[in-house]
Image 1 (tube, rainbow, N blue to C red):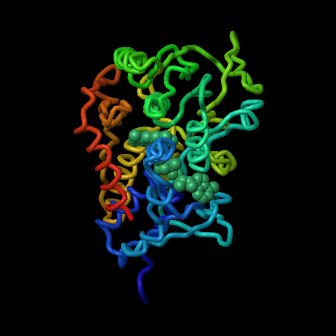
Image 2 (image 1 turned 90 degrees about the vertical axis):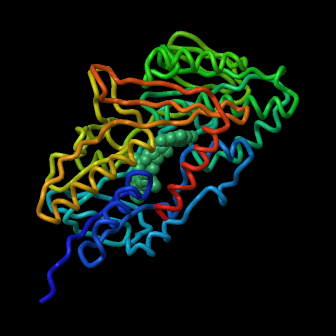
Image 3 (image 1 turned 45 degrees about the vertical axis):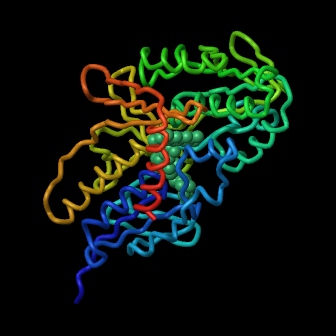
Length: 383
Ligand SMILES: Cc1cc2nc3c(=O)[nH]c(=O)nc-3n(C[C@H](O)[C@H](O)[C@H](O)COP(=O)(O)OP(=O)(O)OC[C@H]3O[C@@H](n4cnc5c(N)ncnc54)[C@H](O)[C@@H]3O)c2cc1C
């Protein structure tokens, strides 16, 4: 009789899921473990490529890799929606089947929830939704004058520098179109500083960077609703001609139904990425990992990727009947483009001391090249 091999089920084929699947497969051949990745999308795109589509230097087609590419590594890809997770019965329900697992990795990311803000869907556009990127590009190209509002509508949100980077890239488009002096760019945030996730010093540098391009930052603006051409905050109002929103983020509904997180929260994990259920792990944006009472690990691909690797090592060692105890180290970097063909690298070490340590480099063409390489490396390695 042939021995049953462990079934490793990975929910989500984004940063965390792809990193975990590939890491496990490099250590375990298909004779030692079956790996299945489930995703309702059949492609993967690095988040920042959306901003390049808005900028007009990319298209959706030339920014995505197909998840069917996993097959060549003997990783099964199931292009279906995840409808339920039964943690007691160790079973996941998808559109057409029930899949049982020995190990489960939940890497389902966060969901954008524009419907939480009254009037937003009707009166604004979603900066983070790939389906709107090309339309946003067209709207910016049509603009002759007025106010562009980039509004962060909830915390935490993915890639904290991205709204400011979007503002800088839009600034460059307007300059190229010769209309920069006729259009004001405003960034609104509920936070008191630009990048609370990176601390006050980096926040000041980001503020100086956007101010140097005449981008105006409005802090502590807590959104209540959106009306035609008007943002309604708790204590003020602001007019706009084009609204680009970063809607509140929540976890996918099945996470709440499974009981892994309370409504509107994320799955609480520690640096071992374990959940209370044996052999069930959670990584990336679907989780919340507190560093101190006031700091949490930001929602970013680099962190989802590393958490995926940590979990992969733990699963491989369990299958080999040993115990890997490596913890997520919380070190990562994220590029912010200046809109002048350069980029800076923001580096964070979340667990370096009583509070995380952060630094930002000069903005150079070298870092912009590294950003392009970051994307190329992952698409090549994972798919
Ligand atoms: C504009 C922008 C710029 C960014 N720039 C950077 C950057 O420079 N650096 C960086 O590190 N990060 C960046 N990010 C953030 C990064 O994209 C996310 O943090 C990262 O994708 C999180 O990885 P994840 O695996 O947790 O989730 P995701 O990559 O979002 O993957 C989750 C997957 O789960 C699938 N899924 C969810 N629910 C279901 C369901 N019910 N059924 C089936 N499938 C489901 C989704 O389709 C998705 O493919 C950026 C994001 C944006 C929007």
